[in-house]
Length: 175
Image (cartoon, rainbow, N blue to C red; front, side, top):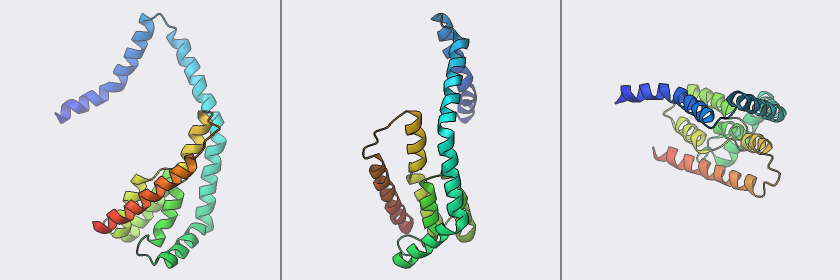
């Protein structure tokens, strides 16, 4: 069964491309012109969101290099007593709001220091998978989709992230 699924997974994309092209040919569509138009739309989208992506990456780099995230983690660990939310996990939690890859880098540093089976490792693993890159997602996708009225999106996303963090702490403590 595993070999069969492996073979099918290799063929899925070529089969899908063939089916789309075959359908366009049957419907007498101009496949090449449609492809070129779609490619130009993709390039325009990339050009639109590129300044936002660069700004987010620079902001995360500045926060990380300045030591502000570590300082914030130290303050939070003093306030929370490192019982509920480990102070060293605060930078991962904050950076995850902006960049998943940067948060993964911070998480790997924590894994090296504490191990993956420690409370810290479990907490970071669970929280990384139960939270979203809110600011990245909102800025990139809302710009690409030309959404101007976001209403309560940010508040709802932040509340959902807080719920994910609390659930991460509870689950990590129970393991």
